[in-house]
Image (tube, rainbow, N blue to C red; front, side, top):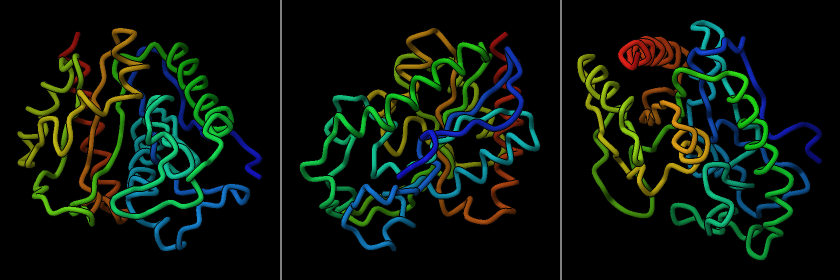
Length: 240
């Protein structure tokens, strides 16, 4: 049994500052949630946003950006989906069947993981009154289920509110990066956490996707943490 909340919070929460949210920061699966998949799949992007935990931890420890981190795998409950989304307890991901989730008690998973995670996140953000939220994810450079070109090194997603994203796209581009604008998927379709906790409250946010092969080592994670912190600090200033 999981004996702790499906999230943890790191760093000093400075009211009016920058915070980080990472919905897919863990590949932990409780013993009483049998997924019926090989353990090797838990190391893949279908279970966790590879590299994100390391980047978020370094931003919290080294750049004073407090973080709210998921501590359960997206294969148990996808915290970055609406409660009524068909993939909130996924039965398939990138061509891999998740047999343990077929016929699963979705309501039980929501009560145990999804709802506590978002209730805590909402209260945390109310306390923070952040100037800017960083929603941090990573994407795989190559899907297994289909062939598509994913050349971007970093991407910014957004739904209706692109105010912060537009500044970030420009600033990351000035770093010489190949920046995706609502790529490799659209924030108009996949923006659940920021729709709920940012756009619904008029809060500025940057939903950032880093290509996972660029943040696999500690050195890379430190480099990207510093760059994201710098760029987002400048975004926050530009929004004044």
